[in-house]
Length: 375
Image 1 (cartoon, rainbow, N blue to C red):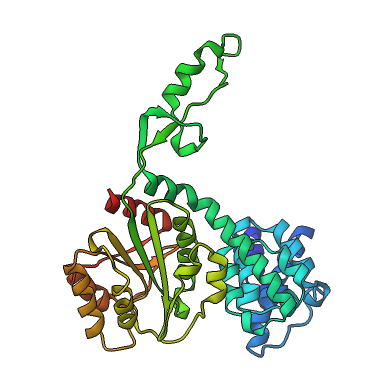
Image 2: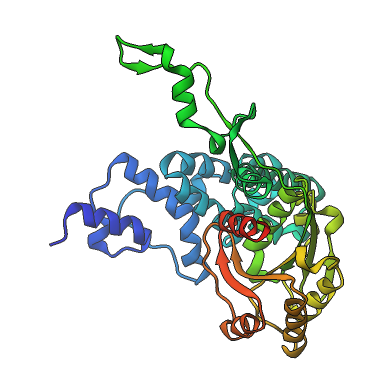
């Protein structure tokens, strides 16, 4: 016989549609709150399949008792952050809760996540002007959060290695010099508590690079690449603020849009891109080929699933020409924190055979790879 714990968990998983033995699973008051919160969202899955609500089996927990804003508040309290963020994104992207998409105050209360930004970007054309302002604010918060996490990685990687012979007044965790800090604060050692009191933490400076590099981000904006588009826009914005790095940003599907003039503004880039459509990678790479000024100091990063819609001959020929000109080529099958690429391996292998390094990288690993190239 299954234990009460297992009965309870299966009852929460299956919801109202559990068989009668599970309906009688032992539930506390908090369990009923969990059940009602899950039912409010995931009960829509059954309704969408035309299944009638079961009757009986306990008190009524009709989801209409909750409003979207109440569901958000309760979910945020009941579930771990990662679970809540996933539910929040599914509420908008999969179930399209109308209350979340019609009330700017509710939208502004959502936690800014890449998943939420992706869902909102796909719905821009169906929103009122008032809601579009709220969407912009939400995307701005998401961009700010991603930028906060990634800026140090790119700044440290692209601005130079640590110079342990020089001190810096810039307080950065990645530049922290533990040994020098201990030496500088030994006189503050407390014998009674056996602790070292840090009065003056020490930080290293960095060796600056002066020779400029051109980095061309060629980004596939087809629907499957939405996560990578978000991270590409943020990375372009970060690198645009760095000296000795010139950023060009090109997005494409079957058309090509040069957004280099907006590369410094990730939010505007994201509100400009049109996710979806076909894919003509060859035309995009040929366009980027014209942007190359100094091949030996140019990095062309093609961020795509390599699902080429056109004949691949033009793409492969362009990559071969760029490689022979000594442009550094990288094909990114994914550029986000999950790094779970689904891509055309045959085309990827053909690109690799012609001189392109193909990989699936997190943004941090991309920064490290750029640093290695530029060294």
